[in-house]
Length: 93
Image (cartoon, rainbow, N blue to C red; front, side, top):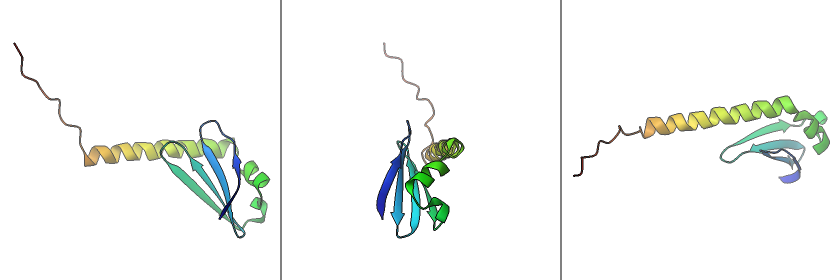
């Protein structure tokens, strides 16, 4: 697998990989990543085509999925480690 390029974005790191004839695109933010394995599609055989494929609508959907992943992560944390009830401190005189 080798990196064939990056797609510029203000909040995401987007890396395009090629393995043999297969293309993969990895989207990363601070804590999560998503990878699209595009397979052997002649329409997506180079970096320019992948840049065209990664349009504004796809990028919005990727960011929405990151939000869902984050919410799922927080919910799992809350289930595993419930927030303790508020601790009442003794009055100190």
